[in-house]
Image (cartoon, rainbow, N blue to C red):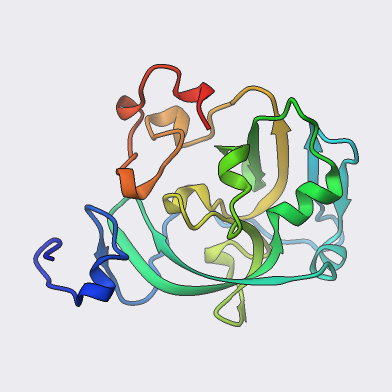
Length: 207
């Protein structure tokens, strides 16, 4: 199998979605400046259509039962990295703690400096979705989202929003920063869901 020229071993090639290429290292891509972290004022919240809204300090969040997820990462710009190890709290655990109401269908990620992203609740309930503060056994660096980032391995990497501050459960979708600028609402790399013009009718009603 040949992708962008190089030939990968079969066991590697089957893990690389169409239009992607492996890279060494971990590229840094984001919009705007890197926010400053003040632990005294920082809170992480789960709110919206939940029975028990959550508001946690950084110490309280990192004291919750943690999980490690080993997953590949695929950026919409075309690069992929394999076997990333993330450490954090699973979204499912947070959803259970908050008590998601039946009418909730979407999750809006709220980050520092007003940045947002969005995904269906169904996508967020995958086993490997978590809020993470460590990568490959080391605390996240500021350029990669310290103190907290969302990690959604089965979607293009812009859905794994950096500098995460809250998750809002909602009945109706609200497009995030990149989604409002022409990127796909679902962002499945295996379907090459890169841009909004690829969406079918009713995409925001689909999981």
